[in-house]
Length: 602
Ligand SMILES: Cc1cc2nc3c(=O)[nH]c(=O)nc-3n(C[C@H](O)[C@H](O)[C@H](O)COP(=O)(O)OP(=O)(O)OC[C@H]3O[C@@H](n4cnc5c(N)ncnc54)[C@H](O)[C@@H]3O)c2cc1C
Image 1: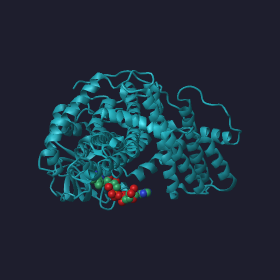
Image 2 (image 1 turned 135 degrees about the vertical axis):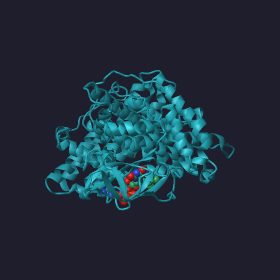
Image 3 (image 1 turned 30 degrees about the vertical axis):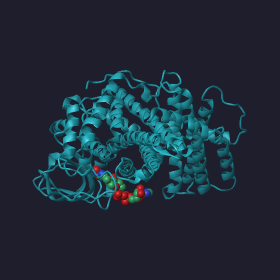
Image 4 (image 1 turned 60 degrees about the vertical axis):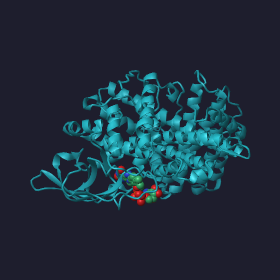
């Protein structure tokens, strides 16, 4: 692999969370069809790794045969795939963000092993890159990049999962100041069975949440048995115990009492990667369903002839396409941010950390969207396989089981939804995002007569609908925030409303990303008819309109009443007026190309 220089700095980009109040342009939005030849060569190399290295040992991985996963990691290290996102100084490739996104996209179908890969390269390695001292980086990163060492991340405990900062594992400095003594227990630790390095969070003196690098051969460090899990059975998951484990003081990661910065910042990029890996898995699952539907004959014809099956395939493709559009958009936003920060003199590691923080809202949105779309896709693929889907002979059952974890780890989807709204409101309060101005403008519009101008130009309806979706979000979130300020509600106690608002944000971000991609595609040479992309867009917008209408109605009726409620419901009606679409024939168009290509082809 060679480095992929891309020095152009795109300044015409939105800041994190700004998608709610501003419109992005297709020109400034990256789409996966723009990946260059060098990036596509890396894609081929990853595909080759999947087919020739991973596939032959898939069953061994599933049985967790000793040495198989570490050997595969080492193979990836030889190919440069463990350090593609790491500085050259430590043996990494320092590739751009989009190439790293592509690598995760292609490795998505790796199933259990994608968790092994993500735990090692993401939550395992990144804390050292972002927060390690030079000495720690020099000591650990080269081995982790080459695959000679494996990493794991220990945050969760039996008593603290989502509430991670309430961890009980404690660390006490020895009287000579040379060591910390760790006591406690971690749970659900991926890669624990074979990892050499454990990023561990513990409370120094019982109350200062702090990160540590713990080596496997530390005295007082032991492991529990492998967990018997629903899915990703090939991924090692164990408990980790510390009984007077003696950790050199120089193995503190970052500052004492600042462990939360490590834990949460690493999760931003972890969530992004999880979305990309999930969607990569969704593409493969969808393709396997299409192939089966084309082969399986019932009532003297392939089942792919049936409208019920076409619906499933098209719907799977629409959701996968929308997530794909959103994830490459965010990937490039982070890449642009990294470039801009580096041009200001920031180090590679710091720039990457800051870029992920800037787009933390989008990363949380993607985590939810990617994991839930994957669940839909694998469920329908299994259904398309009928009884065979329920058999362990094919891949559908395994994919169905493996996908389920994505909604749970790296912050459950409930926590990610809450964070999406919380981060947005906090940024507004700190003046990082001007939500108040646009929210006032919506209030004023509600009090005025509606205009009757029809939108003009191709995609004019979608552009208008999108602007209106944003008005709905501002109307609902703005009114809820005002009631909170007036002391009439306490939003922290009204999670149902926050979930509704988060779902509106998610729909907006995906709808916009899909629109921008399809607008850009309209100006490019491509293998697929624009008519099919337009069908994807129309079905997505049609369904998003209904979902947004329902979420907004649920939220508004939960906190408003009387004239206020009446006015806002009238506004909602006005802002959710996407023209009716013949979704049946649109989905059939999409299904036809999937059937013809015999795979997911967008
Ligand atoms: C296979 C597997 C691998 C894992 N790998 C790792 C790893 O490598 N390292 C690591 O540190 N951890 C790992 N985890 C742990 C994982 O991150 C946690 O399971 C997850 O964060 C949820 O914590 P919990 O299981 O304690 O659930 P809980 O926090 O108890 O949550 C239970 C339910 O309550 C909901 N809930 C909790 N709090 C709130 C709230 N405030 N508001 C609304 N709803 C709430 C949750 O969304 C969830 O639905 C792994 C877990 C699994 C299953």
